[in-house]
Length: 268
Image (cartoon, rainbow, N blue to C red):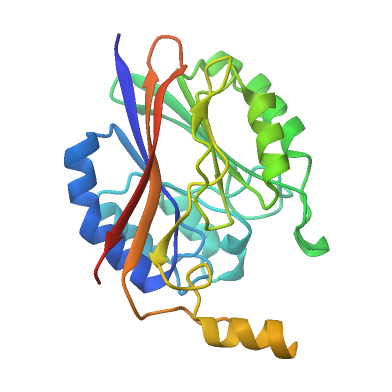
């Protein structure tokens, strides 16, 4: 049984997250021997968005593909060119006038792969509302049926676990892998669903371990206690956690064979 190995790393937060990823990635590649390495990159540039230089640097370090989420649009500089020149996508259920595309089909060796990025609707602010992600998945699968991708991977960028679970069940048997992002906290519900889709509610983050989702505690706590509106600052002190998953997918059936959590601490 031929398998396709996928390594996915959770939301990489700022410079500390990038340093930790670059330090650990060679070891992870030796251990898991991935055919494809994917990271969620919406927090790469000081926590918000991406830059062309950062994406190029991480590609040189071994990253093959980047998914994202709502924060991808918070660093608007050269965004059209960034999407054009790099293997990066944004949630497909944003309006069509937004820069970038929501999915991509490409070959990895002899295997045709489709990666889809979708964003949830629950608990997002009004200015970040998107089309129904369930129906958007239906539309994409119908439109690209003739392409016959062997492996279909979905990054479901969402807040509510209930929405993520529901989406996973809705996609079960129609895609190879659904992994959740956005909350930065890894869940322990990795498993293969009844119809063969690998699933986890959230793969976690890559950033400072003792932090508030990669951000320094001081302003975060002040905002909670004193109801201030201080800006969040990237946490830079302490060891990093590198969260993600490794998935093994059957090339013929497109069904998941295994899904494992990754949680490694790195001194940076």
